[in-house]
Image 1 (cartoon, rainbow, N blue to C red):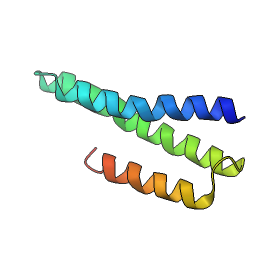
Image 2: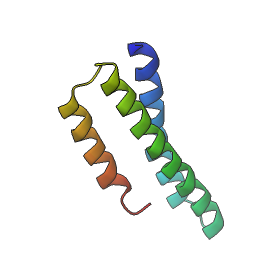
Image 3: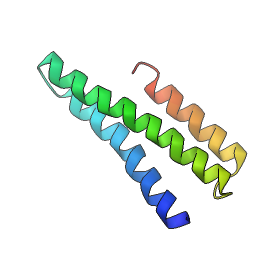
Image 4: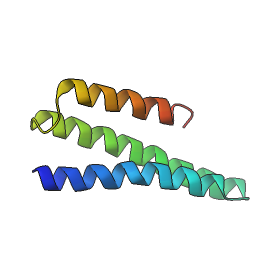
Amino acid sequence: AQATIGRQLIRAIDSVGANLVEGDGRFAKGDGLHFFTIACASARETRYWLERARARHLLSDEEVTIQLRALESATRQL
Protein backbone atom coordinates (compact mmCIF):
# COMPACT_ATOMS: atom_id res chain seq x y z
CA ALA A 1 0.00 0.00 0.00
CA GLN A 2 2.80 2.41 0.89
CA ALA A 3 4.57 1.93 -2.44
CA THR A 4 1.37 2.07 -4.47
CA ILE A 5 -0.11 5.11 -2.78
CA GLY A 6 3.27 6.81 -2.53
CA ARG A 7 3.98 6.49 -6.24
CA GLN A 8 0.51 7.66 -7.24
CA LEU A 9 0.64 10.57 -4.81
CA ILE A 10 4.02 11.74 -6.09
CA ARG A 11 2.92 11.45 -9.72
CA ALA A 12 -0.25 13.45 -9.03
CA ILE A 13 1.62 16.16 -7.11
CA ASP A 14 4.29 16.45 -9.80
CA SER A 15 1.59 16.65 -12.46
CA VAL A 16 0.03 19.71 -10.80
CA GLY A 17 3.24 21.71 -10.99
CA ALA A 18 4.29 20.46 -14.40
CA ASN A 19 0.94 21.34 -15.98
CA LEU A 20 0.86 24.78 -14.37
CA VAL A 21 4.27 25.56 -15.80
CA GLU A 22 3.40 24.14 -19.20
CA GLY A 23 0.11 26.05 -19.33
CA ASP A 24 1.86 29.26 -18.39
CA GLY A 25 4.32 28.76 -21.22
CA ARG A 26 1.66 28.50 -23.92
CA PHE A 27 0.89 31.53 -26.03
CA ALA A 28 -2.55 30.44 -27.21
CA LYS A 29 -5.15 31.00 -24.52
CA GLY A 30 -6.92 27.70 -25.29
CA ASP A 31 -3.69 25.73 -24.93
CA GLY A 32 -2.98 27.31 -21.57
CA LEU A 33 -6.49 26.60 -20.31
CA HIS A 34 -6.14 22.97 -21.35
CA PHE A 35 -3.06 22.52 -19.15
CA PHE A 36 -4.63 24.45 -16.27
CA THR A 37 -7.62 22.09 -16.45
CA ILE A 38 -5.28 19.11 -16.24
CA ALA A 39 -3.50 20.73 -13.27
CA CYS A 40 -6.86 21.15 -11.52
CA ALA A 41 -7.71 17.49 -12.09
CA SER A 42 -4.29 16.47 -10.79
CA ALA A 43 -4.90 18.56 -7.67
CA ARG A 44 -8.16 16.66 -7.08
CA GLU A 45 -6.31 13.39 -7.59
CA THR A 46 -3.66 14.51 -5.09
CA ARG A 47 -6.39 15.17 -2.52
CA TYR A 48 -7.75 11.68 -3.14
CA TRP A 49 -4.36 10.02 -2.58
CA LEU A 50 -3.70 12.09 0.54
CA GLU A 51 -7.01 10.91 1.98
CA ARG A 52 -6.17 7.29 1.05
CA ALA A 53 -2.82 7.65 2.80
CA ARG A 54 -4.61 8.94 5.89
CA ALA A 55 -7.17 6.13 5.82
CA ARG A 56 -4.41 3.53 5.64
CA HIS A 57 -2.41 5.24 8.40
CA LEU A 58 0.50 5.98 6.09
CA LEU A 59 0.32 9.67 6.97
CA SER A 60 -0.93 11.26 10.17
CA ASP A 61 -4.03 13.43 10.28
CA GLU A 62 -1.81 16.41 10.99
CA GLU A 63 0.48 15.74 8.01
CA VAL A 64 -2.47 15.29 5.64
CA THR A 65 -4.07 18.51 6.91
CA ILE A 66 -0.80 20.40 6.36
CA GLN A 67 -0.42 19.00 2.85
CA LEU A 68 -4.05 19.71 1.94
CA ARG A 69 -3.67 23.32 3.07
CA ALA A 70 -0.50 23.71 1.00
CA LEU A 71 -2.22 22.19 -2.02
CA GLU A 72 -5.22 24.47 -1.58
CA SER A 73 -2.99 27.50 -1.32
CA ALA A 74 -1.02 26.51 -4.42
CA THR A 75 -4.10 25.83 -6.54
CA ARG A 76 -6.47 28.49 -5.22
CA GLN A 77 -6.64 30.37 -8.52
CA LEU A 78 -7.36 27.26 -10.58
